[in-house]
Image (cartoon, rainbow, N blue to C red; front, side, top):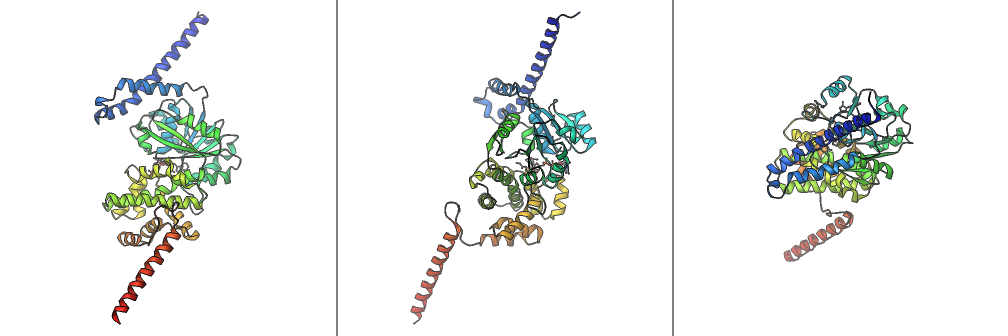
Length: 430
Ligand SMILES: NC(=O)C1=CN([C@@H]2O[C@H](COP(=O)(O)OP(=O)(O)OC[C@H]3O[C@@H](n4cnc5c(N)ncnc54)[C@H](O)[C@@H]3O)[C@@H](O)[C@H]2O)C=CC1
Ligand SMILES: O=C(CO)COP(=O)(O)O
């Protein structure tokens, strides 16, 4: 017979085993980062691996002992939904990843990997997988949605019957086809009562899986939701900043995909660093101009979801949008490039949406229009690029000095110098 004390001992032993497993997991999380730092020479003098390991493990343990165990669903079994669900499960949240393909769910549960999108990366063994949408979203605190923008409304319609107080967070960085709706607009239309937020930042999924330190932004008007998302996802490798500018954060994530395509194309033409810097900075000007027209705060574009994500995707072949641009620059047409990629590249649709909206509303977006002309009107890239360079006199940061004023003043100055020169010349002729 076992005494109550024996059963306590058993429970304690189980706890100790779980604690040990959990601490082994934390230590192995650090292996990659320490190995990289040591290899690169960073660790040779300054890095004391065991001190770093124990400091980070302490930080992780703090989160693991969080008494409020959030119940979370992540919808979308692509690279980003999987990477984020994995972070939450690792933080000790009760986490279910919903994937629409039944066979994929079975394979993921068996192998604890996402073989198609994140091959070779073992997922946390506490992560649960489901093909049953109702079961995945019922009784959850937060539902994170990471399906492509084109499938976002359909996904909301499908979960609508099971919503009873859950909050929704969009991880999607796209726009709806033909409506120009952002994901937050679609949430407001389909589920007007729901508490919602959007998360966006420089978050290449594969780097997150490798525990490379990263940061993101949760934007919501709801402070409790911002805090809950921070608690759910924050870790020693992933920092979650907050914002209440939902439009600005969301537009940063959607618009930067356009410029990642432009930079991928520029890389194929082997442009110089000055050119890359010019494209990146003028892209930021376009993004914030468009954002202001949509009601966003231009300063948001200086944060992680603006310049941060622009930098990450415009400089890396890990970005699918960058890769699309690169293939276009090497002569492939858009359909062939999308087919070859075989993954989501939101920028392909976003270029069309933003081109149309900016044309309709008279918003000055020269890089977007130029890309549209190359991709969809079959214009020669070199001619379009040269035309861009002739686009007249503009101010650098229009929120510091407005374009109209500088244009008008410069044009008047140029005209008056030209006419003075012409007058002098004609005097000489007399
Ligand atoms: N991969 C990344 O590094 C990041 C991606 N994102 C954003 O996350 C969103 C999702 O992208 P990824 O996960 O990268 O895409 P992905 O191309 O890796 O996978 C897309 C997933 O969505 C699923 N899907 C497609 N249509 C669906 C539908 N109608 N219903 C349910 N599931 C459907 C596919 O089966 C697939 O599992 C995009 O908006 C992307 O911009 C955001 C940050 C980083
Ligand atoms: O948004 C991303 C990283 O922040 C991912 O970019 P891609 O969709 O271009 O791969």
